[in-house]
Image 1 (cartoon, rainbow, N blue to C red):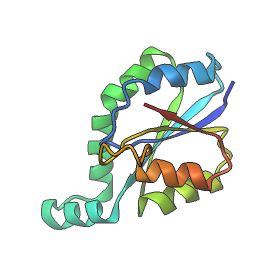
Image 2 (image 1 turned 120 degrees about the vertical axis):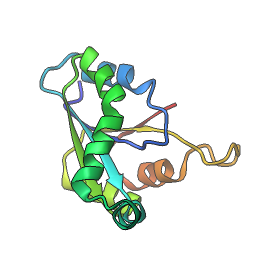
Image 3 (image 1 turned 120 degrees about the horizontal axis):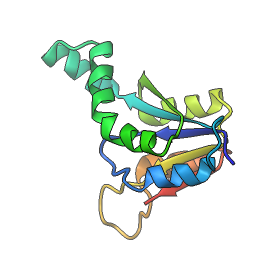
Length: 140
């Protein structure tokens, strides 16, 4: 069904329901690819370098290891994926990624910072869904 899916991954969100939705979206198509995309914020990068002496590659290795339970679920479903990391501000980097590639669908997990009925979507989810022409699926 969908050949090229972007999954902006936020380590603060729950992605428990996402693998089965990705499985439905790809319809067992071996040519489908899911891009798991995480943005390392400049603050996180500078604090890790300053206080922990870490460099970009070390942070990527740690985050890839943290992703393992999620990617194991994707492996069980035989889904094709790639993992990519960038450094920068979240919304501009996501928009840059979306505009630079021809994604068929963006799948996002929703997190609200407060349980406020007024704001159903989290800040990043709202901004991305509002500003892109690519279909966005928000998984609760």
